[in-house]
Length: 223
View 1 (spheres, rainbow, N blue to C red):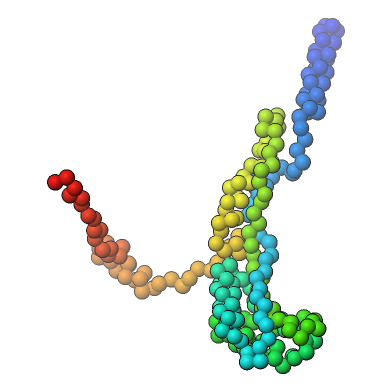
View 2 (view 1 turned 120 degrees about the vertical axis):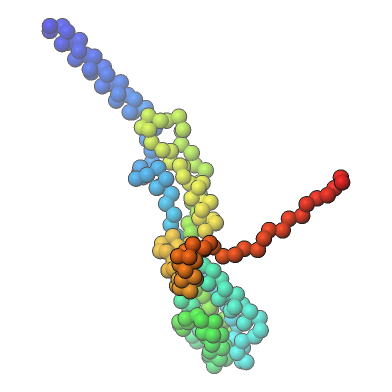
């Protein structure tokens, strides 16, 4: 009986040693395991900025500057940007000219429905420009291409690059990255269309809108 117990103890110790050896030889991962396999590359954003510089003009804004402001407003609407900041140079030789240009720029932006915040920055340059800018959220595109040893499957974990390519493609294609942080509000419902659909439904009629018949051309080659 004693010899049998000694043999079992020796076998258990040998098995434990083999397990320790396997753990020691398996490569260690340098990242914290995610909650889900694709969670290590979750979509996220970082702050970006867009700006244009306007040279001061005694008459206000030039035609090219108006075009540049309209383009800035369009880019802001496309990415869902925030408040537009209009910075005037403080300490310039002709502050009156800079002020007239700023007033004209603010009037153009306000007419386009943009909220404008005025500020200043220090400059001794008599030709220092006015800086018009806004901040927005831009998607973070992860850098893929780093691979672990895919044969190291002892821990049955996902490899460190799992999900990187998918989320990188999504981040590069998303139209408005601010949607990652918070969804946009829904548009107001079309109550008239809703009543029309309900009336047709109660009368047993087709509720979809009428579509024009499809026109197709049949080839008569070979006749």
